[in-house]
Image (cartoon, rainbow, N blue to C red; front, side):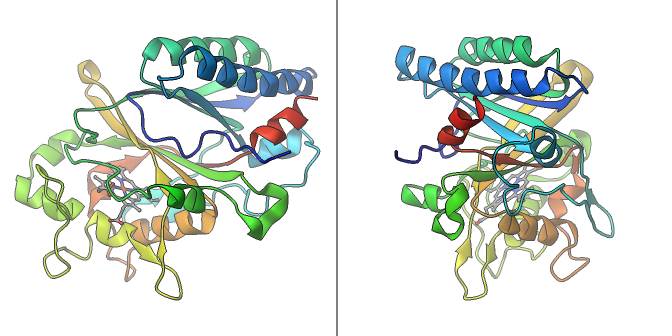
Amino acid sequence: MSIESQNVTDYPNTNTIFMVWTFKDDPQLKTIFQQLCALILNLNNSAFNRFPDSRVSCVMGIGYDAWKKLELPKPLPKELAEFEEIKGVKHTAVSTPGDLHFHLRADNQSLIFDMAVEISKLISSVAESILEVHGFKYWDARSILGFVDGTENPHGSDRDYFAKIGDEDKQYKGGSYLFVQKYLHNMDAWKGLSTDEQEKVIGRSKENDIEMSDEVKPSNSHIALANIEGENGEELKIVRDNMPFGNPSTNEFGTYFIAYASTFTTVKKMLTNMFIGDPPGNYDRILDFSTAMTGTLFFVPTRNMLDEFSG
Ligand code: HEM
């Protein structure tokens, strides 16, 4: 049978719900988890069939503690571990708990809303909800900071190459490492900068999304530090689908950072560049306006594995 991945390489959609749950100590946990795996497959199959044009999907990721607690019929994926915080001179990439992560996408909020209801109904007796964020496409794919987000994402077959495990780890081929962080932005401080200063923080122009030349781009700009290379000069990429969210009445605005990668090492290297800095101390200026409130690593099994886990 062919290997079928979950929809990790889908292109960003207009509506998203992110949910993180942690397990309670409940004797029914393993049974409910089996049902959950079947439900995830069912929700996706049904949505693809009923709304083929909505680009709807639900991707489930499993955390390190969860993998052990569930005693899954497969050893821990190589790089699945508890995320260790990365502490720079000024900013910290915190590590926070999470047993299950759900990434729901559709062009229609009703679809993912109903999916989230079904998932929550099934697992709420054995798990506790610790995060729910409803993200949306803001104008032409802009973050709440006003800059277009996602431009340098891989395209075409590169998406598979950078997001999914390949032949290097045959047992987990088609799976993916998922890393998420919920960031809150200090919009008052951000708006205190001129457009010119904001552009220097990101490394691109605000209106037209054009990358600055290497001579002009500051070494502590976000894209200077997030753009990394391997030992032989090859570009190392991840597949990002960040989503803005916000509650204007409480002045809470943020970005839900989400990345799928064939190896967590690439994400970790980007985070180290951003938080510790390159060279150390030359940290990412975007962090002076964005605080990471969460940080959790998950593994996204293939659909074949979900089928196996469903018993
Ligand atoms: C690029 C926003 C966090 C990795 C960008 C761009 C924006 C942006 C506006 C430029 C357009 C693009 O190519 O997408 C944000 C915001 C963040 C955030 C608002 C959270 C506050 C992160 C984190 C990572 C990351 C945590 C990695 C762990 C990247 C990469 C690029 C990028 C790899 C492309 C760099 C290039 O090749 O030019 N981000 N980002 N970002 N970001 Fe972020």
